[in-house]
Image (cartoon, rainbow, N blue to C red; front, side, top):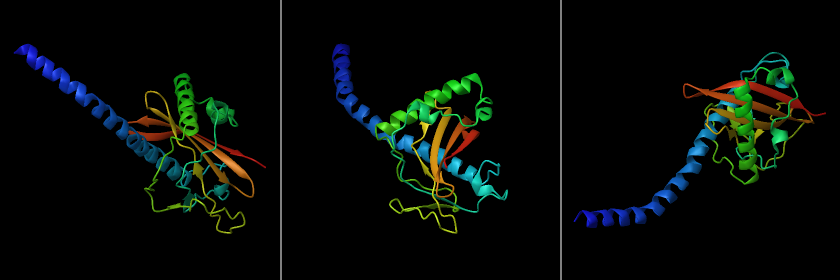
Length: 201
């Protein structure tokens, strides 16, 4: 009798395993997308509150009242060197040895996700001051209201999920610029530990 029950249990497990695996695989993208949305919202909120001299939108030391963001991920291929390029060495030196290690893992994840088409989707802003910029609309560099959108690559994460790396592009004039953000997860909340702005002329 025990042998029969064992056989039945084995058969049921064999039948259910493909379903469970498929269901888990289906849930993973949704889980990743929720994490992406959370991280991106933290970065965009920081862009509206940061008042450092290296951020051109804050030339008057006043954070912008609103921000524009393209809801579709930047699909331009990236390399590890692109992601970890240092244009402000002083900021990178403030990271610990462990944070540098986790940043490299996150960079590798960002590159892998971008180059395999694992993009974030259906971005939803958590702050009414974040406006979604039409996906196909061209940027008007002469717009007096400075409605120039930020666009992000899909975020990358360290293997343990405690560090996130976000890269964005934006226009500060007729020229382009890029921003790199590193965030650390503490008490279930994402905290910015590095922000770097790189301008092209």
